Length: 70
Image 1 (cartoon, one colour):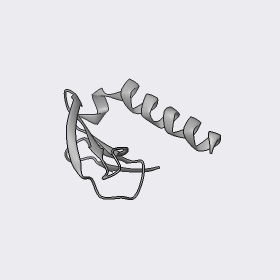
Image 2 (cartoon, one colour):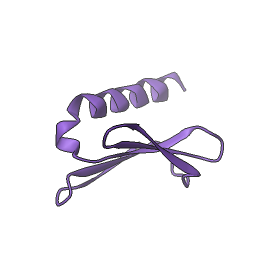
Image 3 (cartoon, one colour):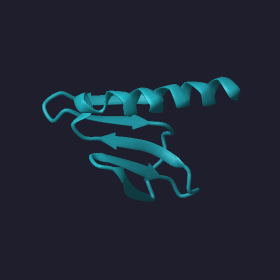
Image 4 (cartoon, one colour):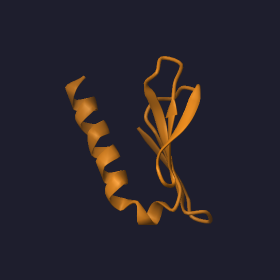
């Protein structure tokens, strides 16, 4: 998992896998999910990230749990 934050736009990209996105869909206001060719998530684009603390924490913790299981 890799995080990229742009302070000037308050946007955060959470890269789950280093693959290109095949499609993007909005999963909640200001949060887009990038999906790879295999249909699995590759990343989250979070706008107004400073207001999305709980969402960001849940994604990070889910990623940590998944990595520990592998």
